[in-house]
Amino acid sequence: MPVAHPFDQTLEHFRSRGFVRVPQSFSAGEAAAMRAAIWNELAKAGIREANPATWTQERPQHLQDLKSDPVFGAAWGPRTMAMVAEIAEGETWPPPRRWGAFFLAFPGKAHWNVPSSGWHTDANYTSALSPPAGIRLHALMGDVAPHSGGTLFIAGSHTLIHRWFKANPPPPGARGADHRKSLLGHPYIRDLHAEGDTAERIARFIDRAETHDGVELQVVENVGQAGDVLLAHPLLFHVATPNVGNAPRFLLSGAMDHASMWATV
Image (cartoon, rainbow, N blue to C red; front, side, top):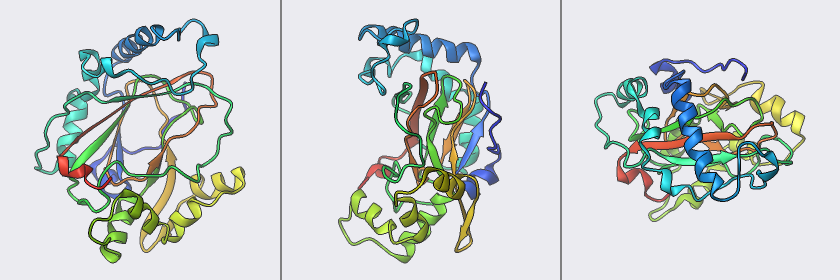
């Protein structure tokens, strides 16, 4: 069983930290049905739940045929949508065209660390702060223990990014790579992208928070139980991590937003 997570469940937490958790948004039975559908699809590629020797791909792909399977609609159920409505603050976003994309992380041999590369947002870096122009959904289809492939987020980074580009407006035609390069001018983001000792990076970025220009920043790991949903601000900086645990991490990643959110990503 994963350790108890520290995430709050209020709109104020979303506004200040950039994410909010909806615990047990869907049932354990619904989560099990989702995993069963994925295992059935993986079996076509020879990856079988009962035989870990077949788990040779750390990040299996080509699961597009499942995107319209109604079993995954439970992630967008009443509890999730009630919190989405609070976050939207009267805004109207188109419903998700698909339930989401499947991000699987099977156990591997990689060394776990706070990554020094790969950090990104899923939307236009200059999009709105509040209310946001969309929402990102991370639904846990199985239990996720620490260091078992859970996504890392920088709490507070949505505000950091918004303020940075207000003070440092990008030139016309700038794209995602240009925005990421610009952000390296911020001392916290610069240090995050510098390689270093694992224990030191965990101690600095995960074990404690830092305040920069009034914004509290801290790296947090998305661990929890099957059925938990994390709703994230589209400007929240995040990154994938290796799974050094014993079980696959099954994540459904979805979104509700306007098409303009994706410009220049």
